[in-house]
Image (cartoon, rainbow, N blue to C red; front, side, top):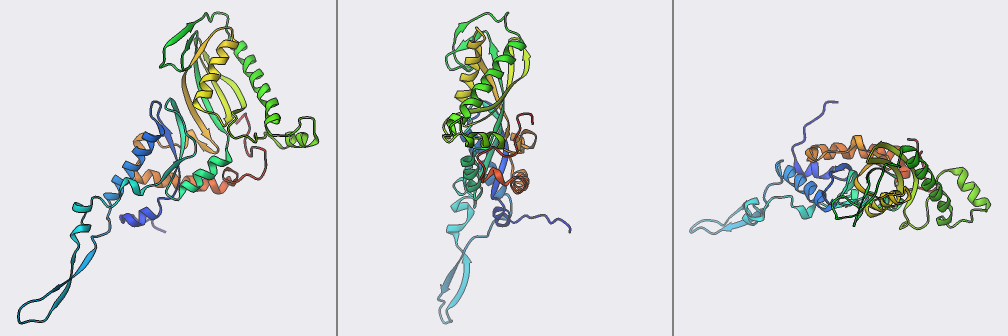
Amino acid sequence: MALKLVTDAPTVWNYLNGLVNLYKPSGVTVQQVRNAIIHNLCRDLNQLEVRPSLQRVVIEDRPQSKLIVRKVEDLSDNVLVSGPRYQPDDVKCRFCANHGRFTSGVTVLGINNGTNLAYRMQQNRPLRVYRVTGFLGKATETHFAESRVTARATINHIGSEKIGKLLASIQASHQRKMFELSGIDIQSQAAYELACGGTIRPTDNRQPMIYGIRLAEYRKPFFTIEVHAINETEAYLGELIHEIGINLKSCAHCTGIRCIRHGHFLLEDSLLKKDWNLQNVISAMAHSNKLIRQHPDMMHQTNPALQGFDEGD
C-alpha cells in the first residue's frame, strides 16, 4: 500500500496523541522544553491546510426585487482577525519525570491524550539510568559546578579500586534498605519470595532508591558513575557525588547528569532539539506506541518486582 502525504492540519492533529522521547539539553528547564515543543508544533500545524473561515448567512433587501439570501465569509473567524488556527493553549503536555535544569538526556513527554499515559507511567515509577560525572578535590555550596567553591582537598590517594569498593558498599546498603522500605519483615517468608522474584520497589514513592551503581569511567580528577534508581532527583544525585567525595576522605562536586534510559525509552531513540518538529514528533509517537505494546509493564505493573530490568543491561 502506497503512503499518502497528508497536508490537512485537522487530520494531523487527530494523530498528535501519545508519548515522545526527547533529548533534553543541559542548562534548559523542562518548562522551556515544553514551550519549545508547543511552539514548533503550532508553527508546523499552521503551515498545513487549516480549516476555512466560518460562513454566515446574509439577507439582502434590494428595491423592486425579492430578498436575496447568501453565505459570506465570517470576518470575525478570519485568521487575520482571530489569529492562527492552532494556539499554544490548544496543546496539552505532561512530563513523565521532572528533570532539573542541569540534567540532560532522555525526557518522556506526553502530548494531548498522551498526558494520561505520561501520568500512568509516572505513577508506575519505572527504573531510570543515569551517567553522573563528578569532580574530585573541590566541594561547592549546591554540590554542582555553577556555585561557589567551599572546600578543597587532595586526591592523590584516590584510585579506581577505592571508588569501585565504595560504590559496591553503597549498592549493598540500598539493597538492604530496599526490604525495609517495602514494608516487609526481612526475616519473613514474604521477603524471601520477593527476593526470588527480582528487584522490588519501596512503598514510599518519595524515597530515592539505588538498584545499581558502578564506576563507568575514571580520568582523575573526573569520574563518571552509572546509577540505576527510582524516585531520585537532581539534588539527590548531586548529594550522592558529594557523599562519595567525603567517603573517599576528600571532597567532590557534580559536573554533569545525563539520563540514558527511562523505562524502555533509550537515549539513542530520543529526538535532538533540531528534530523537534511535527513530522518527527509524530514518528516518535508511533515508535513509543510500539514500545508500550511490547512492554505493558511500563504503564501497569501487577508485580512488586521491577519487570524486565537487569543492572547489567
